[in-house]
Image 1: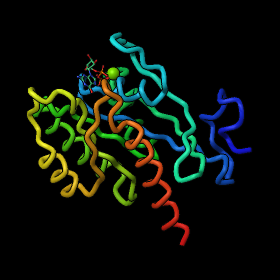
Image 2 (image 1 turned 90 degrees about the horizontal axis):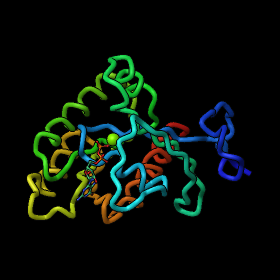
Image 3 (image 1 turned 90 degrees about the vertical axis):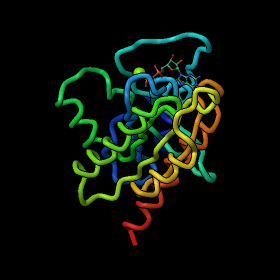
Length: 193
Ligand code: GDP
Ligand code: MG
């Protein structure tokens, strides 16, 4: 039962109104090189240590157990697939939740994250969409340019969640995706009340 149990080939299509067929669309945003694709591959369980991919864009389909309940997630790593305005707008419109990634070793990627947060708010004005701000590459201690405090302060200003991760060490990646699911569920529950 549920979309998790079935053949996943058609699970991107979510038309049913039953909650058990719900598929959450999660979109990765962030500057080039911050680790979006690395995080996506860890999530998708296809990570190949020490190997750098340079694919144009990918979509990962997975079920995870969160608080004893299955959640089906489609993760879109397509932000950089091409440079068309159309795609960017599509990305801003399609997500049920967003992961905005910066690298803790790159201050300008942190500033870009703020910009993306503003764009997203503009695109989805009246909606209360779950967003998690992610400071990736936390393993690179000596080249850090953004502190944990700066990251979490930014998240407070932008009214979103915050977590630091290391895709390389798989640190906090599971927590990140569980956090996304919990946030989506929270918003959904409060809408139904
Ligand atoms: P994207 O452009 O945002 O998709 O970034 P990628 O996932 O392609 O990563 C860019 C580079 O950063 C690659 O060389 C990765 O191996 C590296 N990288 C990604 N995440 C981490 C991390 O958590 N720690 C370290 N040390 N390197 C990382
Ligand atoms: Mg990438």
